[in-house]
Image 1: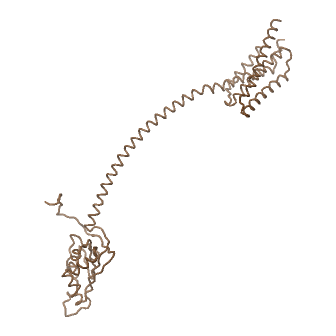
Image 2: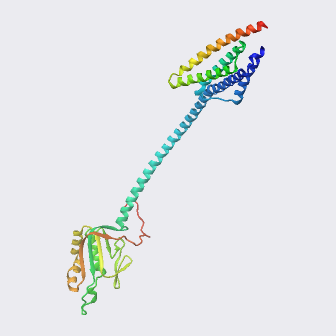
Amino acid sequence: MNNRIYRPTLVAVAVVLGFLVAVAFNTTSKFVISRPQRVSDLVSVVRDMEQQQTALQGRYSDLRDRMDVLEREAAEDSGVRESFSKELERVRLAAGLTAVAGPGVEVLLGDGRDVDPDVDPNDYLIHDTDITAVVNALIVGGAEAVEVNGERIVATTPIRCAGTTVLVNSARLGSPYTIRAIGEPERLEEAVLNDPMAALVFGPYKAQFGLEVSIADVDDVFVSAYRGSMRPRFAASIKGGDR
Amino acid sequence: MLVLLLAIALGVTLGLLTSVSVPVELLTYLGVAVLAAMDSSLGGIRAALEQTFHDRAFAFGFLTNTLMAAFIVFIGERIGVRELYLAAVVAFGMRIFDNLSQVRRLLFQRWRWE
């Protein structure tokens, strides 16, 4: 009678029941207990990230401040540099240290060809004085840049006779001489033709000795840069201008 | 009785030791299955006490009850009436208490006889 209850299937179902209860317990315990844990985890994560954010925001504003400072410095630097380089460019242009181009005239001075044996051969030649006269006349006419056969006329340029050649700067030049000047073409031409010395060359001498001289307006004259050295050894500039 | 309690304890131990768990979505199925198992166990004890226990009928009863309960939960979720599983829960719950009262009565009768 007692043993009647212990049916194998009943026992099996009892085991299944226990197992199911245990599984349910496992599941719910994981589900229920894990929730507050996760919440506290998330809370700490949020706190960490907020701290990180604050730190990063601090660094960000620091870096922005530094960037502002650097940008301002850079702007000042580049402003100073720009004005310096502009000034330098202007000075170099005025000193003849840069090649320049612009409207102007081209003066050609060539020795005479039809040489008469009875006449002094020097009369058929272009002399340093002729070149000097033309260059002076051009400068009087407002020439901003002058060159003779590629030799730029600067403040310290000598033009002198050296045997059968003419010395401009330290270069020996021979006939024909091409003098290029930048300025207002009409004024330059007028100045050359009105110069007493140059007028002789372009007038009577040309006719008498067959000098190959001419003057022409040119829209775009190219004048080369001074190539010599410019190192004053004795002159020292005085600040503030006059004594 | 002791054997049945030991069997339940064995099942619990097995479950805890293997620490098997199911996804949270299936928790309803598990609960209904637990109720079905409880109902079947009590029904089996009652049948045994009434001398009407049949292994095959008991096994089939357990299986069909569990499957039907699971099906009701499933259908409830599918048609948007998730509370449908309450039907199984209420039915099993009523049967559990009904069976429990019968088992109690029969046990009392038995002990008085002895």
